[in-house]
Length: 154
Image (cartoon, rainbow, N blue to C red; front, side, top):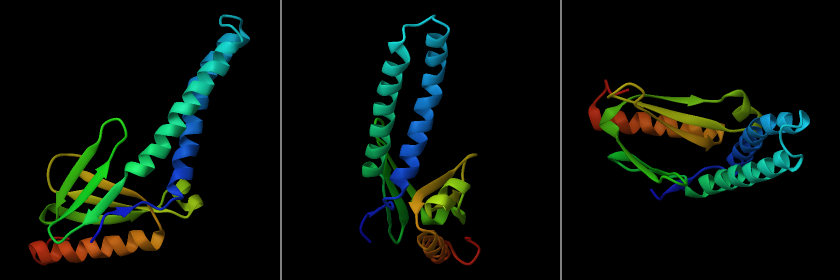
């Protein structure tokens, strides 16, 4: 299987989160300018800088995110500033969920969460899938994990 990318709509979700983060970071500067502790241009400068950085990060994050399912493992490649390559051996998979939060439902997207044996928080999330794609991926991973480790794998 070749490397798979995320659905393009996930960019909208990530950009909206970037806009919200920018607004939250800018709010104290707007308050400072309102109370005349800061110059009037400070919140505009901070807001523009934050918006530019966070939106650029969201778009670059989409371009760097890919995953590949092979017969032995799941391979994930992601990250903008820190590039992360993760390999999840299929024999380590405990169970697989497909998940749709409120924001994902609104965007018509879903995620696939792979829980692995190991330390606490040993799970991998593949975001930006269609609901059908997340269900198909969940079933494929279940099938491959069972084949890799026997009937008690998932």
